Image 1 (cartoon, rainbow, N blue to C red):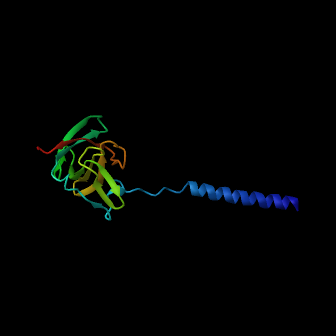
Image 2 (cartoon, rainbow, N blue to C red):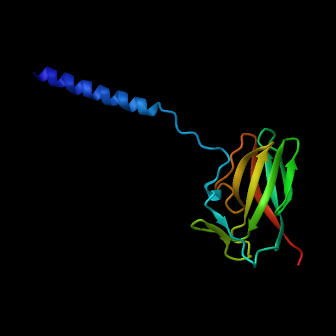
Image 3 (spheres, helix red, strand yellow):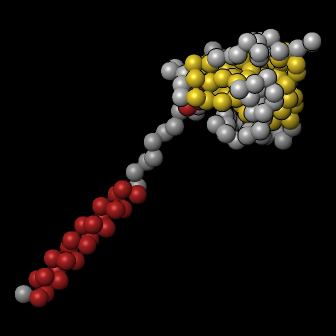
Length: 161
């Protein structure tokens, strides 16, 4: 009788271990490359009147991970540039100098560079590969992961006053 109990306990343990091993072998869910939760469809971007027209362009550093070379590109706010020799295009939709997120609303608390952020859309050919925010003070926050290029907001150019 005792050996039957031991056998049942061993069978139960082996069953549990087999179940754990099956769980470990499952493939993790794939993440959508280029998506940022900071730029969802429900989000609303509000540019305060004190900020509108005050910023001419942003400077974005593009690092080629294969060569280690970094080039800095000036992109007008509301404008776009091409990144030769690739087929990539960077479009800067808006710039917020003191970015804050209040629920679904993204806005700026002032016109002072407290938390500079640029809303960008990066496309490769006809495909949008990133639609989100670049932050100069927190370059790794919601960072866009591309196999070859890295993108960082490095500077901003004020409009002439």
